Length: 329
Image (tube, rainbow, N blue to C red; front, top):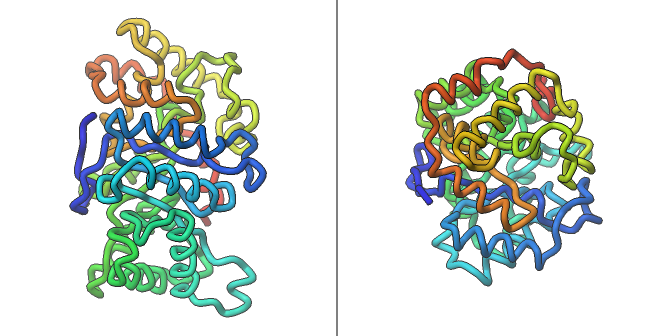
């Protein structure tokens, strides 16, 4: 495993971040394909053995049970100081807004719940899960800074935002001696490259870590079109809506991933992630089977040529925003 500094932080993270949305009680959230505690622990154990030290979860994943399962597994398997834990908070609910719950109380309350779920005193990275248009940005940044000063999180990140939103928030923080976002978790992979319009250049110029989700397009970049062996691909309607199972152009790109995988005698997972690793700090990669870890880790050592990269990229054309970002307005 290779390690890299996470943006403007002092944290050294593995080039693969284990995404933990697939862990948690399937009866307590929006996904019926998530794993129980025993399976979660087995995957996290293997990830640690393979050098992964970066784990990403959220209070929204399976009603907080993802955090609970991850926290329990890590308490058994690792020293707290040896792992980097990221979790996320949601915007205030309509009920909270009507009841005049402040951004400070909402965000601190959310983190307290997450810390209880995780069984930890602090997280390393607390991520603003999506932009809240009903809460002033200034209030969010001030609330997050208080949490850092209280020692409840070491750094802050953001997900599902536009580059201008992060730039505005960080500029406000800089002007008022508050903590800035050190990472952005956006939707980015070989068949969805809209982050290349502005986000990638903005992040690179400002040393903000890119830690994209959906690195394998919910499994679509790890198998040929028509292969329906993935339980998640069959059951995750939200993911299906993002990729339309999949557009003709996307299928042609996936076919090229397969060709390069054959060329190097590696998996499609390795090729797809090796491409992404030329662009970002650490992709968030989910795993619902132990062998999924192996493919992700092997990608770190696969070096694609400039010709390979051009071949994978040349068919892409712009896509409309989908998923959470489709509603970022």
